Length: 158
Image (cartoon, rainbow, N blue to C red):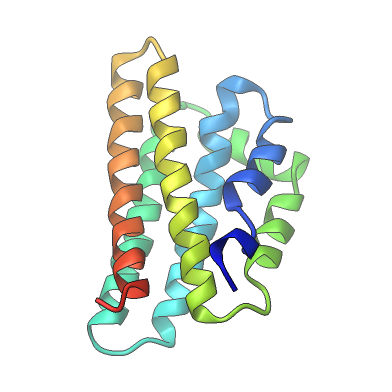
């Protein structure tokens, strides 16, 4: 199966994201980051040696992204509860993208999702007039790229 035949997290989440108010989109993406952190932890449970630690480091980066973004919103928890209630499909979409796929395919999907996430954070950074938010979003982009690089190295056999 080629990567063209694999689902695109960016396209799928992007279609849901269009129904979210623009100022709340970073918080919505932060919800997706939490789901990705859970996925990395599940993968880590089945891994051994250095791979376990590397996958847990990816999970920690996803949580760090979600934490940093939530810190930008004084009412983040309430907003995210509402977003999750308004868009329950995020959980179903998250699971269906990976269901029934080999670990290699799941890593490829996630790596592409990390790259798309980095692009989204850069887009948010470019759109904001708030210097602290811009710095946060750019830092999030870097964290996404670290996880993408790790997954891509695994896929390349390194």
